[in-house]
Image 1 (cartoon, rainbow, N blue to C red):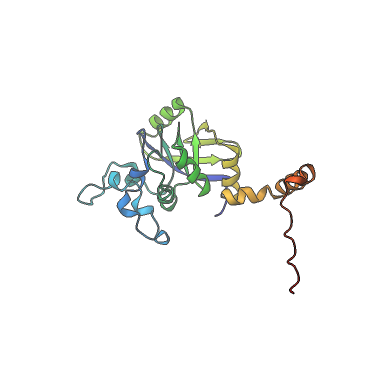
Image 2 (cartoon, helix red, strand yellow):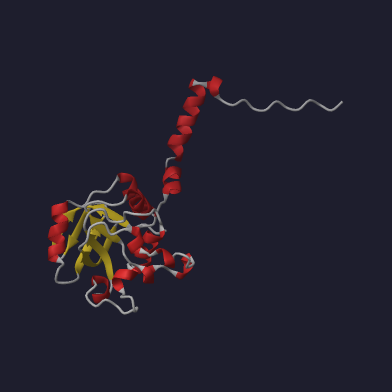
Length: 209
């Protein structure tokens, strides 16, 4: 997975609270092989009516090239399906800004290159109002912790571990490997301080006969 620190794209608002993982990708699509992409399933039942026709006023149907979403609280709640993040990423979404996220969704997002940036509820409402007319240019800076949408700068909160994952293109295993020297130093110090607790090497077997 490639890391990133700066992103320039276009933003739209999804002015709803608790957009959950079942909405982000309905379960009936999850049998599709991952290598076929999940982007076409993103928010399927909000983007298409029961007859399979595109919902004209749905923001993701009205505008092309959208890569930043602004939404309300509890984005990504619901089940733990990682496919919800796959659907966003495969569609081309690079960042979601909202006041809060489902915990598992946020962890899955960081492991797959998607920013789940927490913004103040008042800032979310201001951006949603600003985007009411349609899409706007957006720039996201992970290092500064700031998104500029249609010229308005908004700070977002992000755990440092998630920031490191996104910038370096890491997952949890890569994050652990990055601490290799500290882990080795701790292991050596622990062995010196509490050698009695260290597993002993196995005794060689007795010679035959």
